Image 1 (spheres, rainbow, N blue to C red):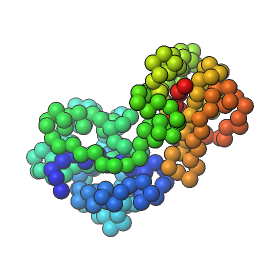
Image 2 (image 1 turned 180 degrees about the vertical axis):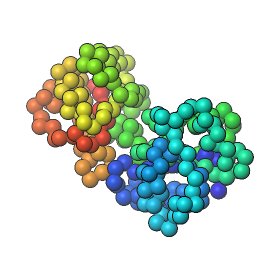
Image 3 (image 1 turned 120 degrees about the vertical axis):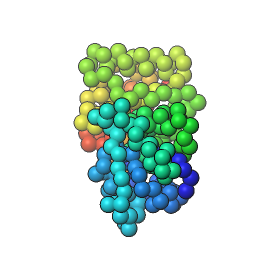
Image 4 (image 1 turned 90 degrees about the horizontal axis):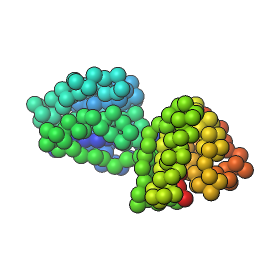
Length: 236
């Protein structure tokens, strides 16, 4: 094991480990005793899925989420800096540091010239662009759009202009219970010939990935996506 900060991807939903993560990840994970995690409970569950024999009580967890005081996260690197022990970062879903608070501690690690090793795993952001059929040479992820409808429409039109003027693929996410509402807003706000890819439940049993023009989506029956994480991708 290298003395490094390992970025450990997790499954998206309840997908089986061996469907999306290489066995190499297993060999790394079982040799790490210190983890920076977004949620301790779900991190423990993930580690048990990786290897049932892992003794959770032997592990140390440092919680890093939107409630964490940013002044203390540098101290989470002490096992690596002072004890020369490998350290892992685990996100809630997908890849650490991509639309994830783990980016903050990675930035500190880089500033301290520590070794950072990203492991292979699923990223819904990248996989949605892959499956969309849109420009994969130039694309942007925009996180969450404003909740207020007027501001949301303004943001959507701004992204649409980037699609048409710069040929840059645009993607964003929404809280699952708002999926139906944002789809309604998209279809009522954008040009009929703008294309939208709805990528839901990526890698999971309920996976749904379709690209249609706005005009075509208006004629299509869209399934209930109210409980499924979605990525929305716009292109031309």
